[in-house]
Length: 178
Image (tube, rainbow, N blue to C red):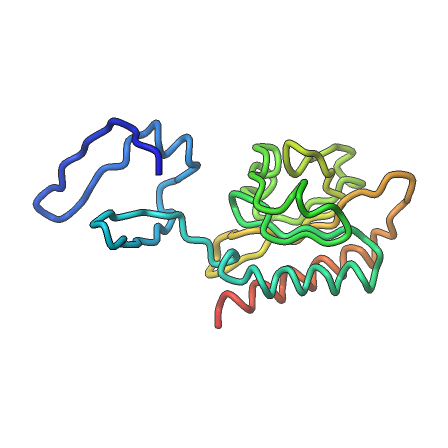
């Protein structure tokens, strides 16, 4: 754990204000759920809660199945980082923070197609350009995305690729509502 040097008092309703600098650095937005942990040494730890992250094992298996059936690299992310990847080196993507361009696409609440937008959206600092993305929606909020990634030298079949990714996003959405 890293000390910040910031001290806050609990108010009469039991609330603590998380400083703006920490919220910005940790990408905590208004309304984001935080999970509370306690340690044996008396520490209290707040972690961003990710419903998609709770399904990391299922996400990894589903991404692997999608990749094996189609040969297309697949990544699944929550609002902050990549939680599953198949068809690409895991060390370059898994648990890496997503870039702001991808966060912007998620905030639109709509599918994204690089072919239709004539643009490039990169997943992480290590690369990986999104070919097609479908948001994972739970209770009306985007909590992540399933995406196919561009392959060098290969043209993707956008029709079947879209169906595959849309199906994955729908499946992941249904798993968060169980």
